[in-house]
Image (tube, rainbow, N blue to C red):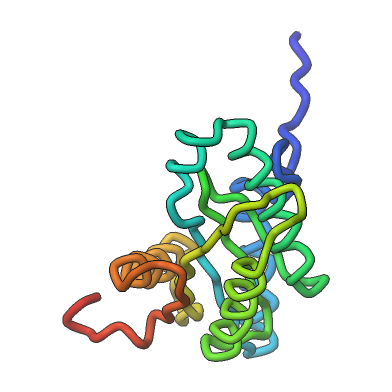
Length: 174
């Protein structure tokens, strides 16, 4: 019988939580938030024009940008927040005990500090667009991700390099 190693809980390039692990953490945090009757919010972030970085500077530089972004996100997070690589140049952060307004302020700090410079090794500007949503009663992870992603989409439509929260999107545009 073949013995398979379990997949590691972290993304190999960035060291952040991977999707599978993030899903487990979400279930635990949702149960905790329900018991405590506390807020749980999600940040969905996407590096702006990342394809241009890969196309003009090479994938090795793109990987450096992803690693530096992961390091930056980890440094911005509290010990109990969960940043994860979602896919490509997309990242999510689960914020326990945080409502949408506080999550938006946190996301804005991430955006402005990232724009100020990721690392000395990256000499060109990097910007990020971020969508924020607070978990609704009975909502699945997919539903929460979808709403934060929709807010991210609207942030990109409004010119990128900005933070937009779900509740600020007019209902007709959702």
